[in-house]
Length: 301
Length: 330
Image (cartoon, rainbow over all chains, first blue to last red):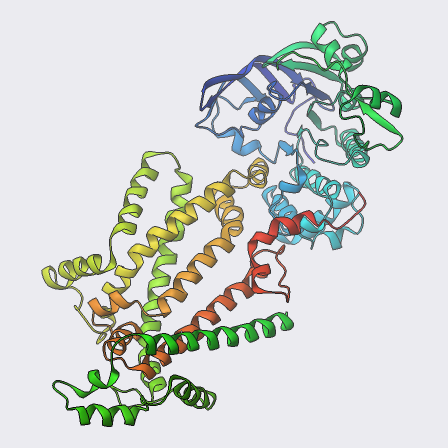
């Protein structure tokens, strides 16, 4: 595996003063309003914020996946030193090779009429492997993402696999082109809680092994703290607070970050729930304990 | 699979029986006398009585139906009044012409409408799509008797490129095919465009784009395969309809197919011939529908053919099949 990046001092991703304006039915919305950050080899940088804060738009901007006619980008998005906003053909060259996407909902992110193997092998072929080598490489990639009986899974269709399995397949597909950066757009939001930790562990393990940089998009502070080197708290298209993960989570400087932290669901006794929620007998997913939501930030609502 | 096919075949026999019975009764309830149509101008009362007796039209409705069923079981659909030949043979003689026209029209439709629909989906909300829409709406709005006559005038009279009528040469196939295809292309291309624009914004397509799949690959490999069921269903349904005889077009172009035969049979109250036509076209329609349903599981692995009924093979069940996840521990 040859990294096209000469040495670790050149950032994998360098975003400077990125602005994204989206053309909507009601007018032009500035979804991202001048954000700048860098990701170096082996680093995980997390953008955290509420729905509509612009974090996913930033991620899609990195991959140039926003519709051309509805999104206007300015500033610079440099991947390995190449600015995607000035070099129009660059996005096509980096997609799947240098930068890969790990999507939000694995259940709808694979074509339902093609087998998992066909889609994985397609990605391997795009990375330049021969047809003969693709089969072997597909099994290796599924092994790398800890899928049991890989040869058998290759013949299955997406609807025959669980969400967690599909997310592993999508990670394998993302790895097919030896990327230097993974853009993970809420990679665990659509998964069962029991499966989420496994996916995050896998991403961290892969990062340790390959030195891949990760741009993590999440609204989950637990996820952010677990995986991040740096966290940028995003609100209304801007970074309101940026810093090392521990610092942002343990000693937030901004009031908005504190409110975001306070909004994290906490486990409390069952009685607590009956006292606070309406209707009183809401079934609890946790059984004996329940999730209590309090002090949600009123910010952008 | 075998059970499913057997069940469907059983249903088909019932469908055909009910269709034939309905047509049999309705024909005899409708006003008009086959004997008068057969006898020619100014028949005497004796002539009419003789003809009625010859055709067995004096029996009670139930009696005629009994004879009809008894003959049907032996594969005898009666003798055509006007052709004085076995009705089924008369229809089967005409069938190849209608089949040729239908196959030719559906091929032209598929070859033009699918790429046109894809193109419209790629240029959605642009001037190009607007232009294509003008064309398709015009195609949909023109009645076939009018577009047929216009094509005739242009390409057989003003510029005598193609023969005006009949099927003496392959050139005779061109104008009737175009007349049918104009309407079908308009309908199918708009449908393809709708299906494709839905698929081109789906998450799996965005993810495929993110891993570097080319626009061509996205369109055909991921977009089109996921639109295959509705598109094939539409094409199949249109094809089945054409097999019933493209009546107006066959009449305009004096095409010797089932459609023009139906017109003649109706004019002369030729009961056996009408019944034979209905049976043949109904068998073809049912067969085409069955073939389409059998193709569903090949086009979408989420569809399973169950023995309960043909409906369960519809793509509408696909999303629910998706929720029935196999529990694989992650």
